[in-house]
Image 1: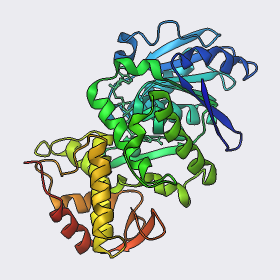
Image 2: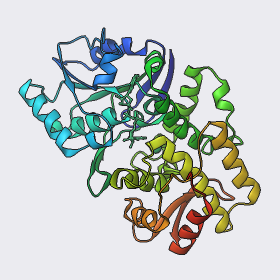
Image 3: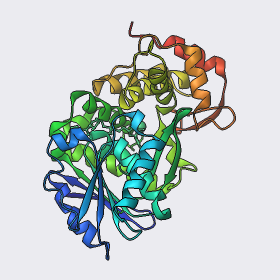
Length: 351
Ligand SMILES: NC(=O)c1ccc[n+]([C@@H]2O[C@H](COP(=O)([O-])OP(=O)(O)OC[C@H]3O[C@@H](n4cnc5c(N)ncnc54)[C@H](O)[C@@H]3O)[C@@H](O)[C@H]2O)c1
Ligand SMILES: [Zn+2]
């Protein structure tokens, strides 16, 4: 197994490899007096057989939650916490999130809230969760007004990235994971490329987990450097929100939207004189190298996307983006709306 430490307070490990989920009982045993566990998961994960044999080493209840962004809701949070209460889960017990980013975001927030903080372990089963969502302690749910508007920073006790579970992951979910991987290509300390994909799967996950762990350790609560993890995400969140809200816009999943957002960020950075044509082309090559589409989805409207971006929680007063530049990827505030709209018009659409 590969172990990547996350040096926050207290520190924890990300364990990566085929069969990593078998380490759950040891993780729970090391937590001291735990009487019971609440395992939160979803039907496709159970159907794929990943709940079978999962053993926290203490008695446990299984709580199924819904799927997709719609299930990242206050209603899910309430249902879970009420189920915890009914099964007598106490503050010293443990919550186990078995699933992708939706499960770890919601289960993590439920753990953060239940008894004002009950420890939790992420057993990540999607590529996106293994390279990103399960690590770093950002938990939360959506509101009808926007994605991830309600949440808490609450670090897990451990993260188990079982690469064996990826054998049942649908093709679209692989694509989503590659969207976040393409993001990391621009956050590492080497020239961005798609060579990551040539490594074996465990090493691919490791490489990304190390970048995420380093950024999280440097800025646990996202006051500065950690915002670079949102590279490509301002437009991505707007595209996701538009897809959910408007049947006329083809809905993109998170990682697919990030891929589009990365190329948009490059074009915007060029418009602002921060990078040159060659660097934009590099963004296009990396995104294509991860086998991802960079054009806007059919039906996307620049003005509506602009409005959605202005609502994004990272926009404090003016439009804020994470953009490439001479010093690398950094937060840029005060971007003019006209530059954003012009850049969106430059992007091209799939239909
Ligand atoms: N907290 C963070 O730091 C962070 C970072 C990135 C993304 N996110 C969030 O993560 C979410 C996306 O996560 P995701 O891409 O993992 O999607 P997801 O959790 O919705 O999982 C995608 C689908 O795949 C299924 N699935 C998961 N693992 C499977 C497996 N091994 N076999 C078969 N099916 C499986 C799930 O049941 C679900 O239907 C978004 O809500 C995003 O906002 C959070
Ligand atoms: Zn993301």
